[in-house]
Length: 238
Image (cartoon, rainbow, N blue to C red; front, side, top):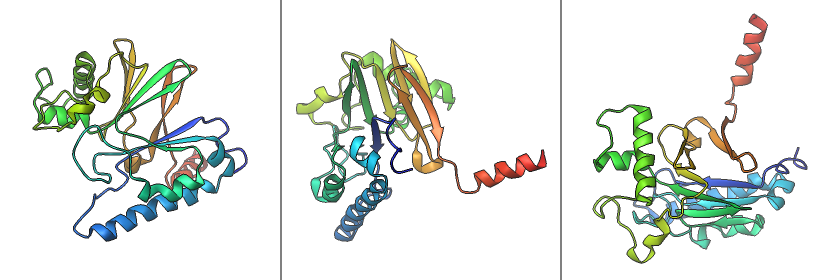
């Protein structure tokens, strides 16, 4: 129902990469396609006018989004590519990566990067040598929170703007630390902060729902085509 959808949701956060293959040799053609995809997204959201006009939409760029430069912190996606979407969604915000969101008395820190794999490749002391899922993400969270920095890596692994390095610092620690990674989903509490990874929506249509009042994270998933048919078949068989 386009008149009721979105009333119970204050904000949607979209995180890149919005361009799965990056920009190739044909820069002009890829840039046009990149712009057209945001226009298509605006068409989709605008089909639900109540949601489009009342909800906030936050877009956090990934490391392969335009401009395609492996440097932190990331600048917002240029207006040239998102002008159409911003004109149709009055509360759309294209922010930096990382970014911080304040909701009432809570602070939410969002960082889109493949943190676990980067820390493992850089052989940060303390990370396990085995690929145990629990240990991998737990050690990654501990490394980042204990050092109070979102990118505790040497410049050879992750270049940064020294002038803006303060944007990567985690002091004071936020209420919710969202490390948006291509790694498996997880939620844990460390040093009083909720730390989580929402996973990749493109892989299985799953996403994270955060309820500020309850300070609760919950994973959800969009039903895949055919899932409802499978459920109905199972009920008939039973």
